[in-house]
Each structure stands twice: as C-alpha cells, then as structure tokens.
Length: 461
Image 1 (cartoon, helix red, strand yellow):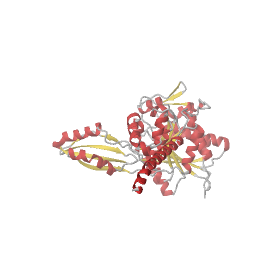
Image 2: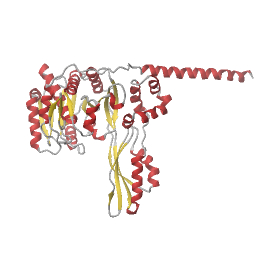
Image 3: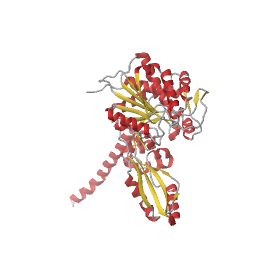
Image 4: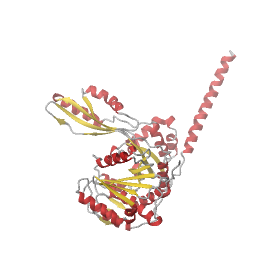
C-alpha cells in the first residue's frame, strides 16, 4: 500500500521535471537563434561608373541562342579588347560556339576552380542605354552582368599582382535554357580530358531583398543542389475528354503538394527564425514542438518560402488525336519527394477520373554539396566580407533550369549570383518588363569574386 502511494507521489514530480526540461530546451533554442532586428547589410563603399560603360559595350552585341557565329566572334573579340591582361594570361578554346578560358600558369599545389557563365538571354528588343546610374538592355539582368563581374575581378587582380592564387577556368556558353547542349558538351569534353575541379561556381540563388520574403533582413541563399524533375503524360480515350478536363482542373486548382518540414528544411526555418519577433522566433526555433503551427504560418504568410520547399507543376495544353486526348505535366520535385511520391499523391484522382499515365521524361537531381567543403566556406567568407553580417542559408533549388551537370566535374558545385538586385528590379526582369542593373550591383559582384579568388584556401594534402 505504501509502495503504491509512493508511485502516485512521484508522478507529479516527474511531470514537473519533464516540463522544466521542455521549457529549458525551448529557451536554449530561442537564445541560440537570437539576432539583432537591425539589418546588417553593408552599404557599398565605392561607385565606379566606368563599369557601366564597359558592360554597355558587351550588352550592345546580340548574343541570343539563335545568333550567327559572327556575333559570338564579335563578343569574344570585345572581351579580348576590354580585358587585355585576362586574354594574355588565359588560353582560349572555342567549342561549338562556346568558349573556354584556362589560366596558363598552372600550379599543381593550387586549387582548380571553374567559373561558369552564359551569354544567351530572352530577347525583348530593349535598347541598351545608361540612364540614372543604371544600364538598361537585353541580357543585363540574367547573363552578361555576371560574366562581366567575373572577368573584371580577374583583370583587377592581374593588374595589381600579375598572378592568380588559383588555377582558374572560365566556361562561357550560349545555351538556351531548354537545351544546355553547350554545357553538356563542355562537361563531356572535360571528363574525357580528365579535368576535375575543387569547386565550381555558377549562377543560381543569390542575395535576397527583404521585400521578397516579407521579412526584415537581407538573405544570402547559397544553392548547394538542384532537385529532380519528371514529366508525366495523362491520357484518356477520345470519349473521355471531359474526365481529362476535370482532372486537369483538379491539378490547377487544388493545393495537392504541400510544404513539409524535414531535415532539409529545418535548417532554413531556423535561420529564418532569427529574423522574427520574439514569440515567433521561439516557436520557429523549436520545430520539434511546434511543427504544425510553423507549417500553417509558412503556408499562410510566407508563400514564397513555401514554394521553395514543395513540388511545383507546369501543366501543358490538352492535345487531341484520332484515338485519344492527353496533356503533359512537368513536376519539379521538392527536396523531400521522389517520382513515386508524386504518383501516390495523385493516385486517388487518377482512379476517380479513370486516367492513364506514362512517365515520358526523367531528370535526376544533382549531388548535394556538403557545407563543410572548402568551396562553400570560401563563398560564405566572401559574402560576409562584401555584404556584411547577413543571414546565410544553404538551399536546394527546385528550378531544374539551374541544373547544368557540373556536379560530374566536382564534389563542390555552388549556385550563387553575387549581383544584388532590389526587389523591384528583380520583378521587372522576371515579369519581362525590362532588364537593368546598377553600378552598385556590379561593385558588389566584382568585390565578391575578387575576395573569393584571393582568399580561396590552399589545397590540403
């Protein structure tokens, strides 16, 4: 009897201790994620209008994916004229309209680094002009500004020190996003020659303006991988056209794929927690306890963050043939889903509307770069040196147009653009209103590449 009573005596004590431990763990997580609410984005310390004048010369040359070889030759000759030290110190090799530059003074003890860029762009017939301290013109936002920043940084280092501390290769392609023939050809050629790299740095994510996510601080999103993609053809007999229309309507209107929290998204959410007010920072810092609440907040108030971490669909038009109707849908997978997961999610709707399906194309995901790699650390160091103490988040990109197979050449492929664009400039380009870039953006990017090259860690044997 006494033994039984003693058990009941200890139950509330155990509950009190458990509650105390929960509060303690939550409090520690909250304090770990404490960050000043002030924006630590570093203002630019120099403003060189000469950069816009030089970039203007490149923008004036048409380099869409469909130009003649004469235009690409003109572009390469302009690089030779504008960057004489770069041309002197680098060998140049043309490859099916693309071009590869390799640093001539190869050192066995120096790290091998690949910078990858492209010069194609979406043609809008926008006049190339400098106005109010910004350069307007086709290709300024997406393509040529990034390449210019790479080359200008190398030219500056060579002008000052006459040598580079790394074995640098620069690959410039004229690929259209839908083909990537140039990239694939270059990758295959490098593989045949046995060229491998300590790090590859190409475009992808970048510095995010606070207005983009609706938060208070600037973010640096470093792309460390790209998810997979597959295409499904949904088919019905000719007399089942209405069923196919109904099924398409479900895909378009119903929120089938949802934001999920797993090990790959927890790191992102904990970084975002640093940018929130106290009570929200508390629950975002303790996902193990408030996971359901966090999911509701993200889906309701931060749709752009949710979109980054759930499967996206691109649905084609219905095609009518003699015997059947069909449409194709492209699924850009989230980091936590595979093709089989998508089929399972759609299973009930496929049965309800009696839809046949066939997977007609699959693009595998890339390898994920380990954040302990020297290349990732070098990018992170350059971000802090140039942009200040901003929040840095490694992320897996769901847009497969950013997948260029460079992970066949290196264990460390970083997809990051150091061109900082205010949210309004980003929207202008993405909505295809106009493309423009400021001197400030160019200075940030040139400073980033300069720091990256000069401070990349030496090889460890």
